[in-house]
Length: 347
Image 1 (cartoon, rainbow, N blue to C red):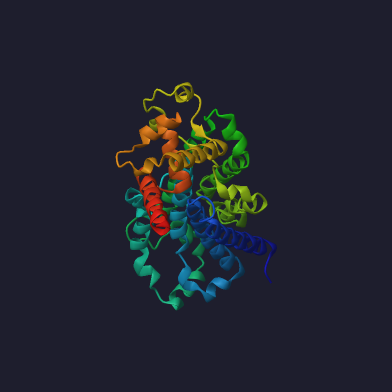
Image 2: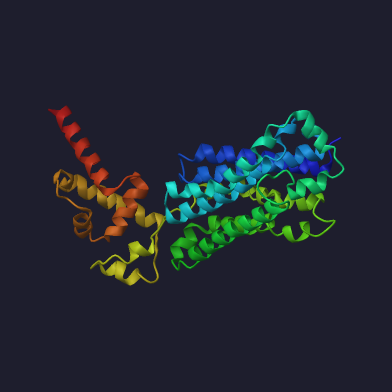
């Protein structure tokens, strides 16, 4: 008989899987960074599944997954951080981001022999009277003392949580009313999403006390069960899938020297290029290029286009990157090739 708690855990697991599929399906239609959020919920679902199997006793049919949940735990917080960082800075994953994999790789190397222990041995281990204590303190570790991983994974979760809070504070410092109006739902969800992650390390203070830490609610919280529930908002408010509707301009972009009075007035207060403003700029760019055929000039530059339109160069760059998914030079080359192709067909 499955308990109410097990049914609740199963519900959160299914919820995480469904929202992962939803995010993957919408990645190409909405913000490209959604795949990182999908990865987060997919990784989050794995330890939740293991909790369900342990609670129901079904773990005996899949003994080899024992101790693999920590791998997902060490990966889903980096995925959450990278999602928030990339969507706020409109950046991409780089080779330097591979260092986020190091904790999980160390754990895999440490437990690699244990993963290949026979199913019979693992089942026997799971029936041990000392199971709760041994699970909690990772006694099978070859590299570290008992208790290392439980401290390490909570410290790691706290580090990523603080990093996300700092990013959240950064975007709330944007004073543009358009930013708040266009992204109010996403900002509220992001705040709830980040705050919910506090339970990924807060239970540490209870777990480390003698005789505590093995109750169902505590275990459910520290594997991310409450955070998994925040995925409900993505079904209720699908606009969250689109992330930030405009573009947040970086400090570097805002500090570029320009004679345009608009950007000079906005250096200290405006760091957001709204969706409506981007619509106006892309129409102006396309209309100007089609009329003047400026893309046929091999020396044509973004600065020249910006001066002709009386639009800050960084605005032009941001709009082309966001709407056309390419840089200025590629955009000019694309228009030039298209123009020549059409001209050849006419002749």
